[in-house]
Image (tube, rainbow, N blue to C red):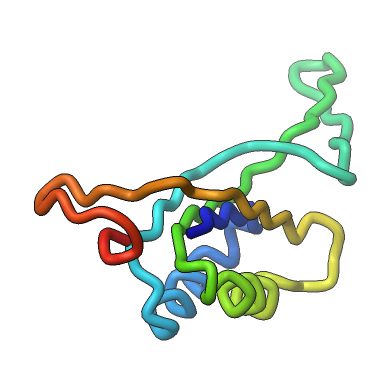
Length: 112
């Protein structure tokens, strides 16, 4: 099993949720986050003082999938979230040792 974390533009929130549901990917976690990458930020002025803004609002999607679904899930995220502009985001893939469903005590892929 793998955990896929995707950091994407806020404008892609609804499209990505819909794409996940259509692909029968369940159990997603969605968070509002801030960060920076190649964009590095910009200068703004507030009450006459210069402020460097170096983080941007992003959306973080987290899903755990079977190893066999990793590539199709990554492809789905790229296809849905890509604009071709700097700031489209990143995808991180991490190993998951175990999953346990609290309600039933099921474990492994059946608990995803």
